[in-house]
Length: 502
Image (cartoon, rainbow, N blue to C red; front, side, top):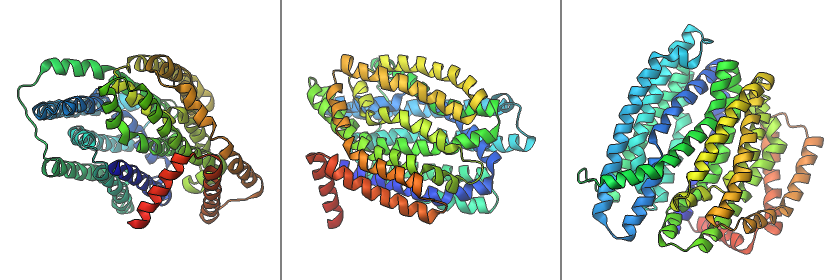
């Protein structure tokens, strides 16, 4: 439990560092790069990120099988599992490099014909570096999985904190020296290699894990492949939903439109990570409960408890951005990025539903009942593409966000809640009663936010910071007295007491 609390706390420290550094770093980066090069960086990244699908969902299956062997106290099978997964991911890393060379040889066809010769040359260098970075992350993911399975969340999150802290300090000097987007990717790649090295040291010298590279059970590999296929399908869906918009905008409207969407997407990514920071530390717990069987009541209670905590955090960010986001985007992004505010709203409002329920994804996987979700989501992702193309032609970047929003509401808002209740056996009615019971706590901050919009002029970072702090204080007071239940208040008090003691 201490590891879980430390993991969650460090996750939010990491997110706070990322947000604070972004407030300082991103405006400088945008002005040094310019809209076209930033859009080019986002476009190349959206293409290379599709190679991440080569993981085929194997990372999600490691903890499931580790939990099974651990419950049997079978160390030999765990060592063979480690070795088999390492071989799989080294092969995937090799395939990634080959695919990268194929993309590089067809870069004009992939990125479209609308770029200049200089942009194509920059795109080639970016693609090489990004492919190498991705290839390193595949074997590194095995070490990440092992650390998670041991529930050593403090070390994992500490690495993330350091990565978020060091990234702007390494990148800014390279940008000021004129290396542009290439310098950004070089810095990110260096940090990836450093993180991988730290993970290797921790797994071998602290956790004393072994890797056995013989006597693999190919029957288990077949079972893993069957289990992970639908996780892979779900990853395809996520990749379509969060990357296809930038690709379509690059093909249809050019790099400037990609830049505007990309800035909004950056806020959306931070928003999603706020939710996963809580749920990710409970993945081993969910797998352990599922392995024991007949624990639906306990799993439902955990699902509700984590969902409320996630809603508490996300509702603060969502309502705060609703009232302060427009001046924030003007100050932060600068001229030409004003419409990014509406892109953010179209993305974060519908995605809030799956974010407060994202522990349910791990519950499905632990119960091996994730197939239906993957198939339905795949169909909705195709619908997202078909809907986004005409919307982009009519409304540009905002149209792309609208297409994604409608798809998310259909898949996550309607289908998944029906599936959780009817097929998984979670108490969805009780879940939403618990979420709705928090709504009275939103009344006071929303009224205050309306006053800010109508009576306060925010035109500099000082005013934005001041009113943001005031809004946060009002929200927290209202949440404490009108929204939080007893167990949540006890949790907050225990965390604050632990911080004071430290």
